[in-house]
Image (spheres, rainbow, N blue to C red):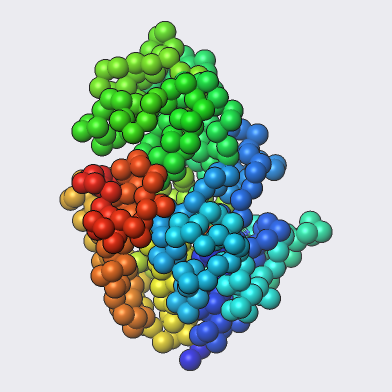
Length: 441
Ligand code: FAD
């Protein structure tokens, strides 16, 4: 088996589990982390960007994390561990709840890094500035230029590089017709931390993903009115019964001449703030490679959302897909990268990998799915997980975990936060379906 020297960019959940799997496979690993600690997203940062829309992750002092102070996981802890190192069954930061707060997940990742031996391989305050191949064709080594704490820039060569730099930092802000007539405040959820600044305001929350739902609910306790603008909300338009002051609308149509926000179903409201909970863009400022692009939020081409065919297996991405069991996907992708580098898992040739990527694009187009959803796996997420498992000889996803994830999505979509504390109880009494809400994200 080949033993490679591997650079891992980023020490969030992806980088940590990638490093563990690489070490287990016998590779040598250096993890570069630009911040002062490991944990990535789960290291809550109370600061916000100077630009409330968070449009420039390269701005001085730009903040990586997008967690809000009150955040609890949206999946039960049983779905957020790693093999041999579960989050369930052990308490890491004094929060034993089934859906713990963010500190518990961070403490879990710290313990995982320590106990797996990965922590010793992490170089903190080491920002990767550039990753480039040292020659042409497969088998070439890679140069990693990085800046250390003393601001000095060094370059080191590795056999392979695994990109684990995350994708929940650079905000995706939709263009709204007439936004130039808007006199109020605009903000992206990347910079939302606490509800207090929205006291007595009328707020339009755009987007109905997990963050949008959490934030709309939290703001409703202090705001005068909360208006949620979302696609796929036709069957739930109007005031939401669960709350005194929350209304559901279709997506924003435009800002009217009088400055009010008009929704696609025809209603309009005067608001103080538009708060975009509209997701993030992939962004790899340290990569400028021939034939590898980010276009309309599609990173491509990527075979299995992991390997760019031209550079496989020596360049790989872990953590690109979303709307799946993230931690389990990170682990399977990491195992695949480690096994492909050692030669234990064989990858098809470049042409066959390209053909598979083209086939994915063709199927998406035929199904009418926009390019920007290339890495959004739901509803076919189980197929991907099982396909990954096949690549590395792991068992398929247990039906119980499949059902739990779908149930969690239904609960999120129900807008009723009580599911987090009633999870086990509901399971015992009525299956805990959070009603009959259709998942429609
Ligand atoms: P990150 O955690 O973002 O880590 C990337 C790391 O790379 C960071 O430490 C960063 O500093 C570093 N880095 C970036 N660029 C460089 C560079 N050039 N050089 C060196 N280091 C670099 N998932 C769940 O499973 N359950 C949940 O409940 C859940 N809730 C979420 C809530 C919010 C608000 C958000 C934003 C995400 C949530 N997620 C959740 C998804 C979450 O993103 C994943 O769980 C996971 O943490 C992603 O890990 P990552 O390592 O891919 O990225």
